[in-house]
Length: 228
Image 1 (tube, rainbow, N blue to C red):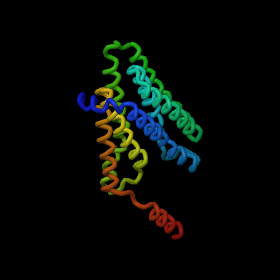
Image 2 (cartoon, one colour):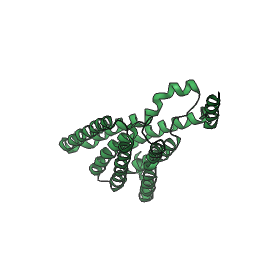
Image 3 (cartoon, helix red, strand yellow):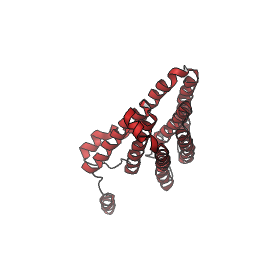
Image 4 (tube, helix red, strand yellow):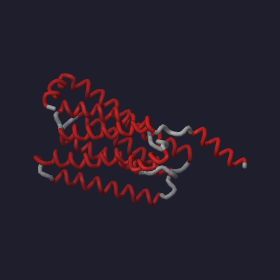
């Protein structure tokens, strides 16, 4: 990694710019879920976890950016945090069980506050490694969460329900952060994004193996049942 980092070092600024742009673009993927919520007029069938996960990751990565004193991480995650707050506000507006949403937001807020408090008290010499490890584990959980339905996907031979735009854009983003991590010679950014890129790549391969079933057929069947 050291040798590759030295080779890529002259390209740090352009890589940082592209990384910033694609990451900010990927953060708009939540708008697709928000549009679905708007169309159906409620949050039925749409979990809040993607939004809360984005909020927690935004807070933690923003703090990590300050720890590393890296402007790209600070700018990108401040933008992502702002979008996550907006998405949660939209979700709350259309939620039918607002009490449950408040509870989930409270848990996410308490979890984030606890980790930020820990970061403030930890030894400055150890915080980069330990805080980076915490972020890595949580990020792996978020990225791998669509694979919780792997058994269902294989059984039905369909990736219907998996968010292709989010996974595809996530693949590009993790690759760019991998390059940026190599340039910075930061082992946590490299480890995070090697595994994340592999997870995204595996999920993309599922779309080639088990393509989604055309929705038009489902609609035709539904209409046929109604007429009968």
